[in-house]
Image (cartoon, rainbow, N blue to C red; front, side, top):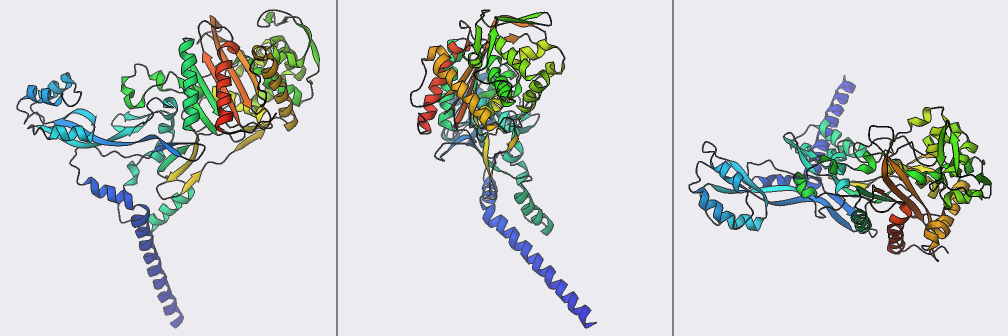
Length: 569
């Protein structure tokens, strides 16, 4: 009996201890970790506002030196509402208020006519100073309330990457880009629980923090604002110069998959997204559109054959200027024959017939396997919403022509992020890396969750990566625009591509319309960054070497200087 009584006493002590631990734990969460949250909740009681209180985690860029720069934050100000039942002289009120802020006249008078209503919002996002001026007018039926809204300090900067916060029916949420992908983390809607939780709920809170489930916080991007800005300036320049339909670019660390910059022109201003006429401007074609990439596919084809020892850089073939397969004629871009040339010339002179020759040496099945292993035709898994996968179903055919055209980048269509990820295998020693944009999440509980580099698989041998890099550095030094861009102190690997534009929904190509592509990495060995550029339907210029060489070189020189990369020559 005594033993049983002692056991019960111990159980009671344990329960009391656990209960006390739970209370202490909860106090820790409330007074230390969530002190600022509950202070803000208390302060909210002093704001007289019928509007829904808005709160959301912030998004930051981060420079090479670790300085964080706001990309998306919360701005505080006022909204103007009227009480039509108390508004005595709408005309006088409008005239006085419109001297202080821009006021929609039609909306104001339409709202003022609703005499049975006592609350109509007529202006938003007013500065506190302007709001105070309006309040000092002491107009009956005119009310100023506190308001908070999503604000993007950079305006159009990285707009297609960031997305925006907008209404989905009656709920404010991330609608595109990172705002949508990380909405669960950035949202504060679920962050206002009851103050007194059960012990089980406290344990669940701790578990969620540790496992990362339902965490709330701010996100810090891999995007460097200086690099992003430089990329955008160059893209905007060529977009306008060549009156293109679109210009895009990615700068990625090929060793880790970290995205240093990503942009599309034209962009939009997420602070005024409602002014846009087309929803398409909110999409990110880098992850949500596919293109036939043209000759930047050739290095991938040659690397696969090098990897299988089917060719060497010194091997030659007889270029007749064309090849006929399945009764279809494939020609070089200029229709000319080169005679007996080495494999290097396939890249130097961008020979379609040479890419076909290499694919045939490799074999159709092996070529298809490498295409798949490069990640073409599959989602990269990048942390952006609604990513689509490339279209490589032509390689399910037995027809030689499908494999031949794919070898030089026509007939298969992939997303720019897929292609950049595949090309990174040439620069990093042959490994397919998962690209990512968020460097870390700073949780509300004070825990920093860092994104880890993730290797998907090895695609090429290291020596293959070195060999193709050596060949591509010769392209940059000797062949690109006659070698005028060669850098004496740095090795750079690069290749251009010019592809026909597929007619949407129809088999065939648009006449005299092209997509220009350009990729390169530096230094050519132990690359620090890879730049991928594309230009859709540029006017007045036929080849990518003429439209994209200069911006690529500008960006590369900037990156070498900005990151203080030591010379390798």
